[in-house]
Image 1: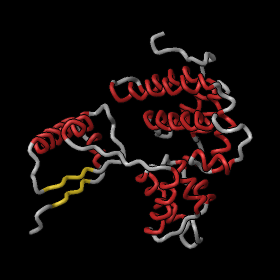
Image 2: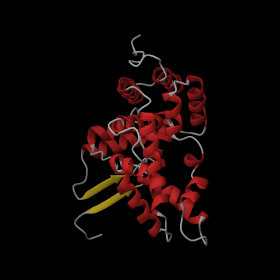
Image 3: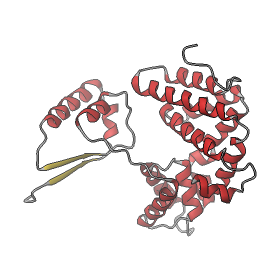
Image 4: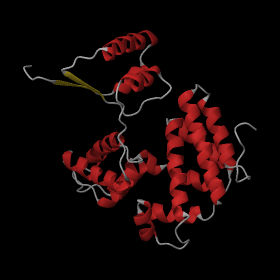
Length: 273
């Protein structure tokens, strides 16, 4: 109480977005007034696993506060997963930590949540293994971005749309799907600079991915024309902008995106056409 400064940490700030309209408006009004004239002896830290850039809450923070997005590379994310497991009283194999970080796109909050489940699951069985991750983490069992990448490479629109429907039914957010696809496209563009027969372990060092995923990336990258990959990044950037700056029908927008990414024209159908 007698310290010259105090730090107030608010966890789960994303829950503000799910409140009723009146409650949300009251909180935003009070927070906005506070941020206009904050207490000089207080550091207010709002933690959120994810925020919708279209919502007023996010826009308020962007305007009146410092917004910091925590992101780390694949190698660092695996090391962080191992450290988190240790803090939870468990051990996790390096391979399992790398797989978990890869599945969750290196998001620390999601890694922590899944590790808590894995720690309980593996209690009394020794170390957490890659097999445990494959068994327990939903994203590992089912839809991965590389499966969708295979469908896009084959321009299998019907399968890709069915896959998208499954992702949305499982609760995946459109913005997250777009972000994962953009990451995959960037990795594919990097992989095109490697010889077609590069081994998984060699590619892993270059791409910052686990060996089996890196080998898959090289294989897929040389099946897709570079022009198609670059056009795909443009389409994904436009979709991301639409999701954050307007209020579209998310399903319709995602279905249109899949149609663009499976277009037989490497330049893809432009948004204006």
